[in-house]
Length: 402
Image (tube, rainbow, N blue to C red; front, side, top):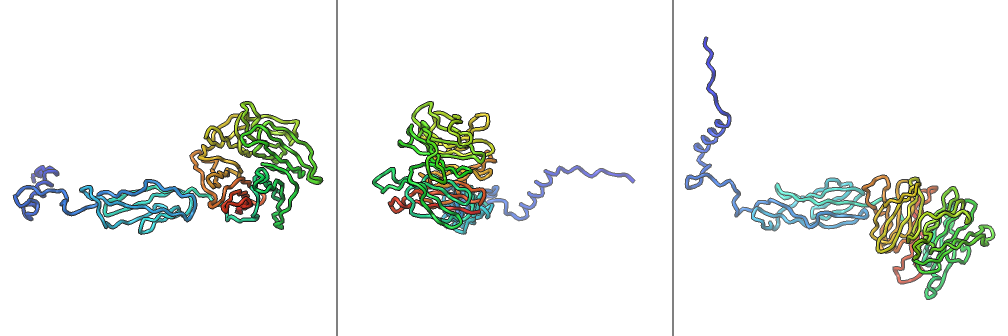
C-alpha cells in the first residue's frame, strides 16, 4: 500500500474560502450595488458607547450621608441618549449602597466603586467613607459657659469654664468636678484656666494665659486637693493652651508666644517646677499628648496647621497637615483623636497606616473644644463650647462609650 500525503490547506485560506461561500449562498454580505456591506452601525440607530458620571469621586464623613450621581449616556454620534436605561451597582455594599436612581448612601468606613451601566457601556466613580464610630454620643452636662479645660480619671471629670474672659457674657471663671458614677456636678474654686490636669495624689494643675493667644504671658498653678490652696505658681513665658500629665508624673505644658525663643513646649519631671526642660521653642502649640511612639502636638502659625510627632531623640516629623485649627489631641492606642472647632469636627487618624486619612468620629457638634480618652472606661470625652442659639451658656460635656 502506498501512503499519500493529503494536500496542504492553509487554515487562513480555508476560513476565507468558507466565508466567501457563505456570502455567495446567503447573498447578505453585499449591499444593493453588489459591494461589501458597511460593518459600522447605522447612525440612525443610537447605540450606547460611553456613560459619563456627574462626579468622579465621592467622600462621606459619616454613615447615613447621601449624595446623588447623574449619568449621561452617550451614543456613537456623541449625542446624549435621553431616556436610556441605566443600571447602578456598588463594588462594596458594606461601604456604600446605591439605588436605582443613582443615590449613593454611606454604610461603613472604606472604599468602593460605583458603576453606571447602559448596554455594553459603563462609567465609574469612587466612593470613600471616612468614618470611625466609637459609640453613641451622650450629653451629660449642658449650660456650660465656654468650657475649655478637661481631665478624666478615677471616676471623675474636671473641667473649666472661661466665659469670664469677656465680661459682657456674664463671667464664670471656675473649676468644676463631675462624678461619672452619680452625675453630680460641683464647683471647686473660682479660677481661670485654659487647661487642667490631675496628679496621682489628686494635685490639681491649672494652666492659664493672660493675653489673647498667641500671647507671651501665662502661668501654671498647682492646687492642694484637700485645702484647695495654692502650692506653687510658675510663670511660663508663654500663653498656656494645654497640659498633659503622664502616668509617671511628668507634666507637659504647651502654649504659644510671639517670641522666637519662647519655651512653647516644656516638661516638668515629676511635676516639679524646679525640674523643667524645654523641648520646643518659638512655636504656636495648641495641644499636646503623649504616646508610645513619642510626643504629639498641634501647631498653628502663618495659616498652616499641623500635627507633629517628636520622638525620643528629639526628631520631629509631620503626622498630618490639617485643614483647620486643631485645639485638642487624645490617644487611644494606635488612634489619634483631634478636634477642629472651626469645622465643628471631631476626627481620628490611624497612626499605624502611613497612608491613612482622617476619619470623622461624630457629626453635629457645635464647636468642639477639647477631647480626652479614658482607658479605664474605654470612653471618649468631649467638651463643646458652641453657641447655636447665640447664647453663651451653650457648652456641653459629652461622652462616647465603646
